[in-house]
Length: 352
Ligand code: PA5
Figure (tube, rainbow, N blue to C red):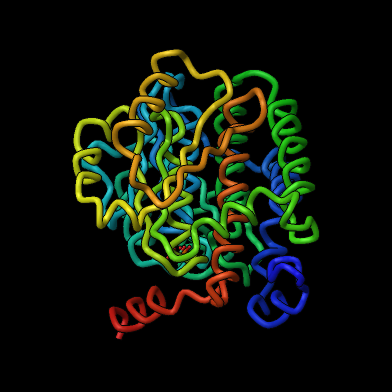
């Protein structure tokens, strides 16, 4: 019998808007936006004291990725604001990125307006909407995104322009090699995980099959991968239409591990550990001990290794594996990965 994820009929029936195909386009979207971002007019920035990224949901994850990528080594703090207000310290010495795929997200529009009133230079990343119009009024540089995409499928568009702009503004090393290396890692992964690759050789299809009927618990082996665990959780929510847990070592050893004591609940959880190939010994030992002590009664425990040698490649490789897995999980659960009706319904009611 044909595996349902190897059967084209499954995709025709359950994925009419082609979320599986959008996932496979991630490296090419990245390439396209990288070329555009390198030519973007940059704002006049004085000596910046903070980088602020505004954005909600699928448009906010770019800020999380940016913080994970450059935050630890950047000379000034990178702060992600997922709210309608910017912190009081925002002013002419802050550089603001305002990200909204639709351009109509009320929190992002208001926070951007506050930042502009405080005199902050900004770069806007959007397909248009109110945010696009307001950016034109303020004369801010805009990265114009194609419309009609689910924001969560546009992650390279929402993330890479910020990486490029900051690298250019701070003259931080060779940009193109960094992206080119990550792009090659992502292309290789698509070749392994795309829907054309049969389940017997496709790690994302096999992982999704183990998650069906359980609640995924996605744990990053260290804080540097936390953003990837959060992205997996969000993709399980939005594509897979299921609740999911996420957390990161070592913090989870100081609270969440106790929640696993209730075996009836633990048996419903399927653990996915996001790891790196060259983890320090203290990280590997911690994960091994936690597997033995805490995850004994989990429905399953899987490990996914980041690929590539740069932080950019590692983060994006984990994002890509999670994206594929969440789409396959949706299809195995018999749901269309694309619609996000509860998000739209809440927005509609709040606007009414
Ligand atoms: O995935 C989604 O559809 C949401 O998380 C949206 O990204 C979020 O509601 C914000 O909308 P937008 O991306 O248009 O700013």
